[in-house]
Image (cartoon, rainbow, N blue to C red; front, top):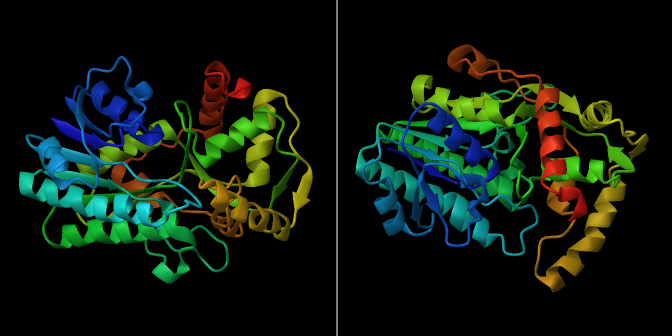
Length: 328
């Protein structure tokens, strides 16, 4: 039996499917408020629990030989940042403690490239690029930086933990959707009249899921592996979507102060409403840097697949269209 946390989410659902395709028995930890749509029709065992509840985690891990800790609170500009630390940092500590108590043979912890350092020259960073907590803008990145440190600390204590750092997955079943999925939806709706000079590393979400399984099989304990593929500017991503859909890509490049000013305007309104802003200062600050990464280590040591990202973008477009996101 293998436990997956976050199995109802975009990435977690693909990890669950990859494990089932391999013939594994899968148990998923679900919060009472989780949307189970991504697990419909799948032969998985469901256990109700919460990352912040150690007892529910102990019960979920009991009898499992491996744990894929994929779950995380992924919100930019959350009204109460302490919630991110409770779920991402304390939750990771609780998962690791339960796994150690159960004596599992391998734990794969899903971090993010957002917890890694960036190169001053803008070139692709790798697992060895220096990073500091002070360099992390916003509660989400800070909480994931601390959560990754927690996982690696447990590895030093003898728990067989491998860390994977996905870049920006794209593909189908992005139900929430993620910020990148929302970008695709906004493009399809014609709501992207302009862009800023930024960049991302994209990867097919199915390749990320396979990267998790490969990390469990071949990853060295205590090591980090970037799960990424193509480094693309935002303009290149939008042009790829234009080629796939026949829609026009935006041609206006905005200076960074424009979205920054808009985010400043949104912030007090969001605080009054008690919800995350439509455009957060956290996301704007992140967009000032090109998030380019080198996934060579994962390709060499794990055999990480490198499916052309346009295939994943096309599947994402078709899924959003079929799921009715343009009419919502």
